[in-house]
Length: 425
Image 1 (cartoon, rainbow, N blue to C red):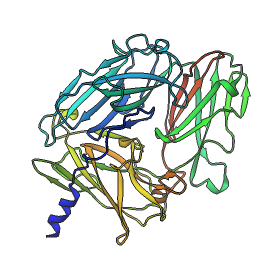
Image 2: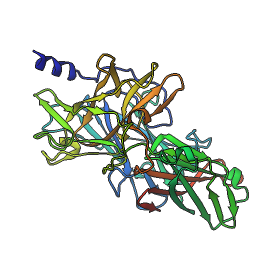
Image 3: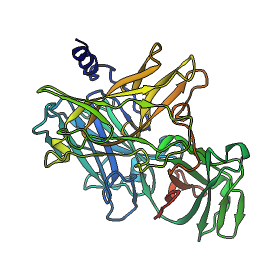
Image 4: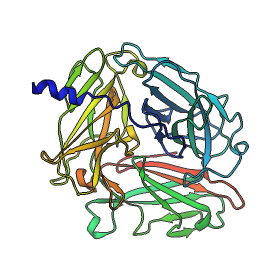
């Protein structure tokens, strides 16, 4: 009897909750529960950061799935934002050299899948939407041409490269944190005069493309000829966290990495992962991960985009609650490290166990567990994952410049680095 009850509890669909929020925000957000697997990346490399050069041949690939299937009337537009992701107070004429919006007409229906869905995809810039200045942008998708019916908001970047950024990862300079935190020092090399770098330049540092980790630098430690140095002892310290956990569902014909069981019928696919344990004690264990990323894959079919199955994935964490007033979540780039009812975990106090189902598309996933303290309003992974300086993380540095008299912030520099590899544009 027990073998029957567990799958029944586990396979409850999480589609039917949450109503549409009628207000757009300038963050990565999904407003409808039927929208899944939002991807946005530089088309040159799958799941790379959505950063492209201004006036180049590079493009942004943006896609998503609609689990309602059929065909919907989705429209989209883009908006220019400040370095702090507030809507820029400029006209669309200032940042667009084309139309203001367009309908998404590139879509395909799923095939050979238990759960039907429609896959939508666009590429930017295109003949209809053409940004003409560098900076932060938000792509906004809405239903029936009505911006009061938001569907998705997604951040991306247009780089007007004018400076070079040199950066390195070091131990924290705070003695008590040297084994747990990583410090980023960087230098901006520029070939043009910057009259007031304390007012005109902002440098944003982010870990693993996680917006929750953003640190904004407005004051360089040193101003040298053609150089701005940022190496203050008390800034740009990040918890090293731990290597991401992962699971592999590229095939549903066998149980791959971290998959305990697969239940499949004509209506749904359900995947049970092995139970996880907290990693706050013990030595650091190095393992290869994708720094929180995920990849849609289906080795059982021919087309990852339309033949990959949707699965209800059961996550289980064996750990006591870190505090009396908080909630646990499973997070990764697959949900933009955000907190929602979809990725919130239930807690069984008797078993000291967290568990929850998340609907995901077939593929490879990195994930970790985070705790939101309702008293401090802080979300962190340290209570479940620990923190180690040795952890391999990626860091993104964005440099913004507002010229004297200008009305917007331009992204003039960018670099993506890790403890091991640096990738500069």
